[in-house]
Image (tube, rainbow, N blue to C red; front, side, top):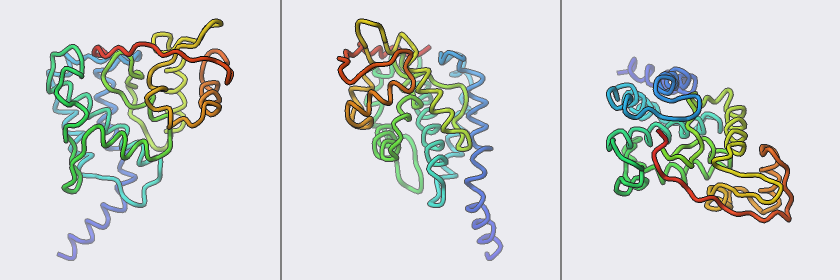
Length: 232
């Protein structure tokens, strides 16, 4: 009994460090089924879902600890959100859009310590509460207009660089945001989650960090139609 308690305590201490090994599983899956351009081969992935299911199970068995850093927490939940979204689509594949699934963001599909979570809860009650707006360019909803799904797992030790790269890639993708001399057309992500980016002054400052063209506070925004077709 005493020996078991020591082992459990030891595992709790090591679990943040073990994140790398856990996320290696997700990285392997992404490398097999996601292109460098964020296209997902759902058809091929659907023939072998053991890897993604094992990864999600590992996440559930190794939940976040109170002593984890913000980057460790963010990496865990971003990867979890993306893996759960992919598995939800695979469980209902073939389909044209994630919106063809009944209540896709409200289904309780992830369990930690007898608490069940939906994608909506992970996004709005966990990730958005961590005050990092760049998460919106890292989590993927399985649709064409969403930020591309990275084929690299997010890692706490390089998370800031990964989020910076995701934001830059998204804002420089002309299918998702358009910056011309005449007008600016933004993704509706900036409309739906405008509070996460603060005032218009803050949003302009944020956009100017990553966009191909500088804008000003006087710039009038239009928003592109969101394409919910599957990102395959």
